[in-house]
Length: 138
Image (tube, rainbow, N blue to C red; front, top):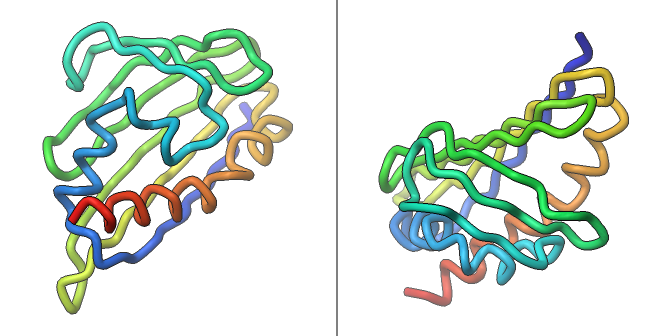
């Protein structure tokens, strides 16, 4: 089975709580991820909750929160024809009291190699927007 993996981190002065708060409020995701034009969640921001995400130019895509550790991390999974996409998000305090934010993407399936660059191409831009927004929340 084909697998595509990608990881990107940003270090910021924003607090871990400010970053996590932006993750936990899915209604605000489009503020920092410009590819998102709409998102829903059916339930709390907790493992097992499901929702749909609409990416520019695509129909709504279902996702499931597979892991949520309040204040620290969350993971979600999306199954589409030819691939399963898994996204991991971690926020942690690093040396000097700064905050490290990491987004990891793993794609499995026959279309993984083709989808990988399309899915991850704007991750650095979205993460920079996320930490900038989190910094302004302080």
